[in-house]
Length: 85
Image (cartoon, rainbow, N blue to C red):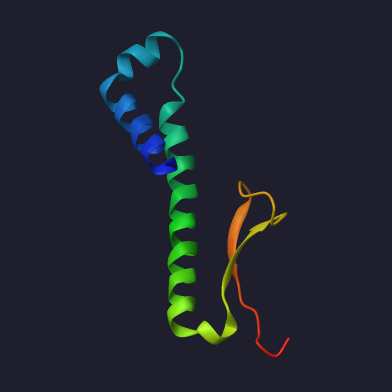
């Protein structure tokens, strides 16, 4: 979803650059960079989770979010649990 919004910002910036400049709103290209960085990080975490699920299923990988697990708009990361704990 974020990637689609980033792509929309990029296309709008490319196609309607004169319009955005005329209304003094040159921020879409910067928004594109920020949104693509967030999307790239999220994709890397998801692939790390998929790899951990395939390679280390005994460690029970789980997706968590920083700073709070209940806040899904936080920074995602993969946590491994040990069966012995």
